[in-house]
Image (cartoon, rainbow, N blue to C red; front, side, top):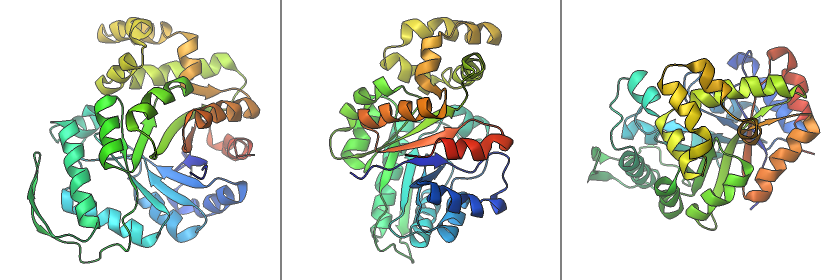
Length: 317
């Protein structure tokens, strides 16, 4: 597969209307991809629609859209619209997301995440292939749906996957997997579950600073916020970090956030958060590529006044 090199958008501190020049700049610097997310900022599709219109050199991706927060038909329509806007340049990412996003923020029951992801994947594949879908899936039913603007070619669909079940589903029924919150040494374990010949993308958190103390302070706060969510906690147990992260989980469960951060070892931060000089950061990203990541997507942790320097310094060589 052709090696790609992406970055996460939209940038903090930059309005969507002001991203046009950034997209041109990214392509000029050698970034091949821009990937959005769908958590608590912009939705996943709007930034990519702007990129599709403003810069034809960039590949586009979402990592990921929750399978709960759009109805099945609307999900297919939205994917089809972006595929039409950027033919051959769009990769769709579907995922179960998490209980806080789905239940707390959207008021939707977070039931049967594996089954829901599988069912949405199966439905959108059929819909995007132009089929009329009338089917009772395990987690929802669709009756008589057919896209009136079918896509010329179904875009690749990847699954956000953490552990064996979803990784294997990505290998069997999707075009690949999107990984998140893992170290370079964890990649092989995940890729082995997906199997050969599949596209593997990963969001990588990058904090370009040679102040290791500050980087680890920020990294610990991020790790305790994410890895205490059940899905990510189970992922890291599966990866073999149960013993080393149990003190953090225990402190978090006891309501002691300060202690939860304090007991995260430096070695865990250094594995999960890329930091150092620009050269050191690029070398760390290369470790992920060498381990099997086809689309590394940098989530750059910096202030708006340092964004230009960071994006330039981290660009592929």
